[in-house]
Amino acid sequence: MPEFTHRQDRPGAHVRYGEVRFPDGENLGTGTYSVATDRQALAGGDPVAAVLINRPVFQLALELNPQTREGVVTFGRADGAEPALQTVYRLPTGAPAGDELLFVVTFDKWVVQSLTLNGKPLEKIGPLVN
Image (cartoon, rainbow, N blue to C red; front, top):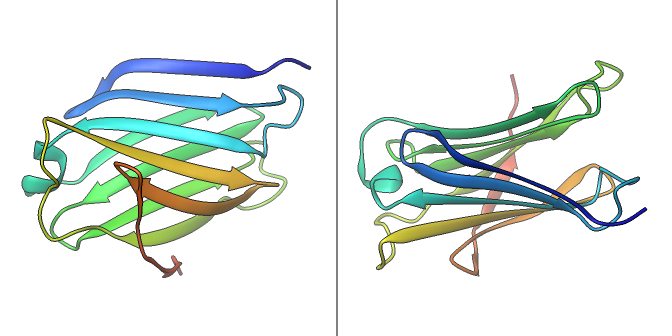
């Protein structure tokens, strides 16, 4: 099946857009989720989130918390068959230069592989344990 891409413009405060890309529209467990934010997303005191849910197929979210310096990626099926997995990454102390921050989540076979900020990998600090 051909590539599938979906974009949401201004889905929340300080979020410019969120765009999910699946290279194979029949394999929604592999692809990327790009989230562009204002610099304020890392400089403010409140968490910022970009969420995309396509029931019953998948759920995908990126939450940025400047106070704890953590970025939490939630990814999984939205049919309840399996739990959604959450992976935590360390955010930089200050926002990088520039007017826009671009976060890219890469996932393969329903597992989050990485989170980058403006092309630079962020440190994975573990799964989130509830």
